[in-house]
Length: 106
Figure 1 (cartoon, one colour):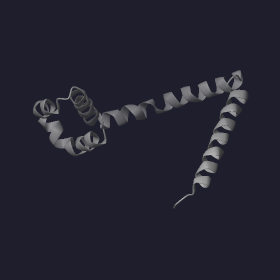
Figure 2 (cartoon, rainbow, N blue to C red; figure 1 turned 45 degrees about the vertical axis):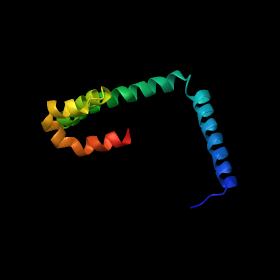
Figure 3 (cartoon, helix red, strand yellow; figure 1 turned 120 degrees about the horizontal axis):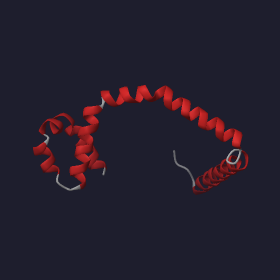
């Protein structure tokens, strides 16, 4: 789809107007409303307690990958990926496809 400059300009104007409207609506109606704030705090607290076990389970499932990813980021930021490859060959063999994709994206 090719858009003309006028169509792009009008879409951007509509987007900005909508964002300003939403921002002002929240600021005027909800931001300073104590009842709304308490309701949101209660909902977030309940959600946290209800889903904390799920997050722990998800972490335990992905624990090895997360640890390998952290180690890789550490060595990547030090610009010494070769040392990572020699120090953690199992991690590199297992996740090298994903890590090389991330290197290319960065």
